Amino acid sequence: MTSQPTLPARRLLLRNARVAPMTTGGTETQLAQIATEGDTITAVGPDVQLEGAETFDCQGRLVTPGLIDCHTHLVYGGDRAREFELRLEGASYEEIAKAGGGILSTVSHTRAASEDALYAQALPRLQAFLAEGVTTLEIKSGYGLDIETELKMLRVARRLGRDHPVTITTTFLGAHALPPEYKDRADDYIDLVAGPMMQAVADEGLADAVDVFCEGIGFTPDQTRRVFAAAKAHNLPVKIHAEQLSNLSGAHLAAAEFQALSADHLEHLDEAGVKAMKAAGTVAVLLPGAFYFLRDTQLPPLDLLRQHDVPMAVATDCNPGSSPMNSLVLAINMACTLFRLTPSEALLGVTRHAAQALGLADRGQIAPGQRADLAVWDLEDPAQLGYRFGINPLWKRIWNGNL
Ligand code: DI6
Ligand code: FE
Image 1 (cartoon, rainbow, N blue to C red):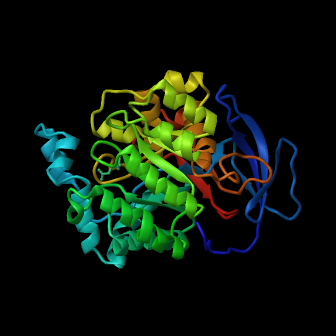
Image 2: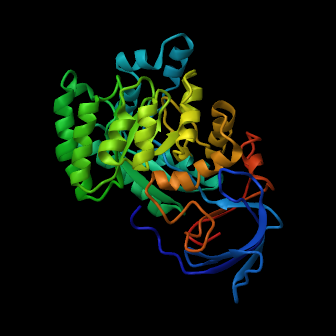
Image 3: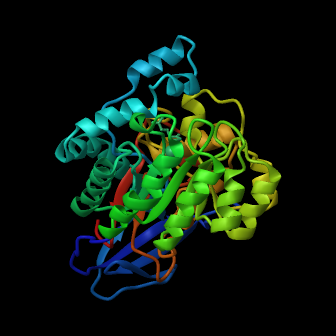
């Protein structure tokens, strides 16, 4: 997230913008003018004017905050199409992982790739997100699992952010899987992750947060705790992959003990976990793409999350194994069709709540003081955003006050 390109300050007045209310209540929109100065929204309302501004007529089109994808593994080497075939022949995601495929197959491709090659492979994926109105995107490491390759992945992510009109945030996910050289020595590997690996990441300022895959095929709650304690010592906020395939109460641990920004996946989350998340302000990040692609049948506990008023974000989980999806607009559709989110819940999920899942208070809403990151859609109603799929409804994208 550091070192954004500094672009010249600019005054922009978006006229006749159809603005969604951004509450869970409804989808009723209002026509408004939006003024931006430099990188900031300065006024929103029916009568707003801005002297000397470049004026831009939205002609009644829907304007939302720029979309935020708060959970991706966008940087990786190779693909896993062969594994997809194996799953179609009956193998499960967990069986493939246990046989040394899965994440570890991507690890060998990522280790073998140069920094430039990784960058080149990630580029079309990033461009697909930008073309659909994404203005902030999180990228995790976790396909290196050694110091050198974890740093390489995070450097590529930072470089993508420096070179493109988007805010990239980075998350260190050294505890994603056990690398082959540490077979049967998971605790030793956690020593490396929580010790020298995290130190190296922190020394270069390469991570904005720390994540752990807490799962039967990942790491135990105790191992997770050790990584999070180290993150805390480095002043890095934490996030967790939890309750995706089983319930290890990882979300509870992350929320209650470490005030996690978010707990992600959550198909097997129970009420104790939901309550702990509410108490800590931890966002529930829903990943319908992984649910879809793994043909999961266990739904996250949506009614409990609603009942306890836990903010819900929606993200792609863009990764080569469980969610090779490069469209946050499609994730909105899947959140509605598969998880029965309302269109306004889904919109909040890719804006305000996604910002909260990244610990960013300066974006995700159309309001004075927020960053001038906006998406103008060739649509009139927020419900249309999640309704049609396979066509890109973006009309214009504004990042940092620039069209
Ligand atoms: N859960 C996921 O959905 C991704 N990582 C994780 O911990 C999948 C990673 C992969 O299969 O490559
Ligand atoms: Fe993930």
